[in-house]
Image (cartoon, rainbow, N blue to C red; front, top):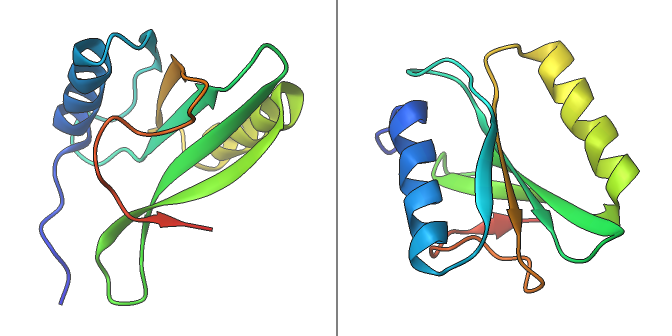
Length: 110
């Protein structure tokens, strides 16, 4: 059974607010479709490396995040550009966190 999906615009606002609460710099880099756009979160872990978290579903259909990296920033940027080419409704959040974590509990798929 699939759980209810939060509208993308609300999810993005919540993520940005949680980063703000944790005093972690984060910005909305790209605005997507407010209702159904997918969300990508790029997390810079240092000056040269980042990781990318993409919305996904696990085998049971529950909301999760798919992690790419950590990898060189150029590799992550290329993955973001490719995702935008496939789906122009994508939202992109960028944060700076050496821990490389989302500001909330969420299953991370590898």
